[in-house]
Image (cartoon, rainbow, N blue to C red):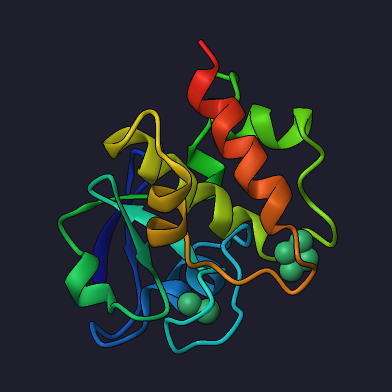
Length: 150
Ligand code: FES
Ligand code: FES
């Protein structure tokens, strides 16, 4: 059994501590907005926040996440108001198939918390998520739009 704090709720779930956090989030908790892409911490589709830091949830265990605040895409909007990154994604028509986009949004939200006005170089360094649909230019434009949003 493990206690996980996800999106402000503490949940007791029946998993081994070495279970990848991604599996627990999707299979045990049922939050399927976090996507499985590669399973080897390369693509970024499974990105969540751990104490506000973007992490690839396929690459860390439930045991490592226990005691930390986990935020998934389902918990990013607060009080029914979209996060400014989510709004910028809509305004800039970023998604194509959408599969990579929840992880992309989580990575960008963490970037803007650390660097409210990131340069293109900052974006290139921080956002290494893979999008098979090739939305990288739209992602970049939406990041700059979110950075200047009030
Ligand atoms: S599924 Fe976790 S990084 Fe690809
Ligand atoms: S929008 Fe399709 S993989 Fe990124």
